[in-house]
Picture 1 (tube, rainbow over the protein chains, first blue to last red):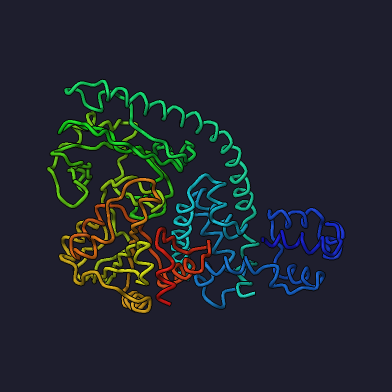
Picture 2: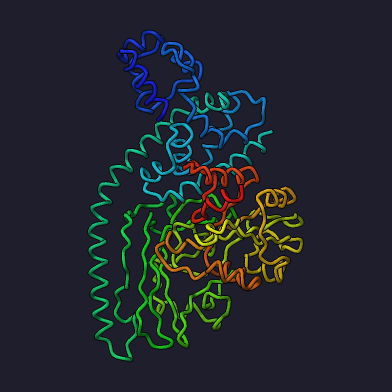
Length: 147
Length: 372
């Protein structure tokens, strides 16, 4: 279950509309809708606020994403701030082919399963995973080269 | 959250990239619907071709070869076929996710060429810059050559000459590919000039014998090649762990060498035969390496690819030297990864997690489980 699915689930359990939830968070209802659809993700501070509203542990909302991010976690040196990480990822993606970039984003920003990505992009699952493996290698080199 | 900074960093990646991915996802879904229709039509056409070609084989006299019919003998295995333009204008048409199994006619004269393969999802290595960055999938048409009751397959060498191999490491002869290519049914349209292909396990197209590059090793560096054979269910039931071939490549010629050359020039006969390693020992081997080349070969590729792979793990056990060469002639799933990725992949596989860092198709997780 994605973060979006969980937000929807806990919002419904709390008998809230998207608009009501948006008001509590001081964001637009459209943004909440995008979170639930998986088109955008709340940042971690928003996740914590959401968890507070739903009275749940924030980890519950992002545990599956955390696991996916383990694939990338080791690539970045400890102590690197998130802005710096963003910069490096953006530069890296700028050097990728369209297809590679899409696969990377679908995996690590939309957190789609490789099988789902494969289905959506009409590739085999093995191919998607191989591309992701290559991308991680490239990203690692890119990060090393940026210091 | 363990990866909080990374999580937030990825929230803030360029909005254009997010939109682009979103658009790709949607457009592919639409294209998929069209492709499904196209695939149905193509599947029908292919089936029809099989029938027609079978009839033509049936009717042909002894002087006529399979190629004379002009109809590829293809069985479509049910995968969806989509064709799209390449991002690279100079590239050939792409065929995504297409896998075909070619039935070789039972009766064919010695010396007669006939088609054995229709191209497939091929993972492509960029020859120009020696990197494995491309995910293009190329159409490849290839022919088989019958000689003395054995099937020989064109084998393209790095110097661009061709020879044919029976897939078991013996060569029939070198031959002039240019002269014979028409005979071999490889049209200009389908011919691909790239020489280096790596086939993913689930995209294995028959047992085409193409050289592969050991592209990420550098001169003067120590390295390790681990050849991992998938365990048969029998092995798994016996609780045997994976088998590995381990080579130090101190004499490795480095960047640009083909596996075949590396094998012949550097490794010679395997320094160690088939050895059963524990996961810790593998980790130790990897620790000692500067570069890592890992080749996954599994006995289960046959079922994965829907086609025949003659490599038999049991043969490797009984014949420690030769099979390695055979494996390289056969098909392999090449993965370049870190030790952490490698171990993680095994653990993912073991845990049944779909989020594998590295695909290890066909390897029975039971083997690892038993080891634990």
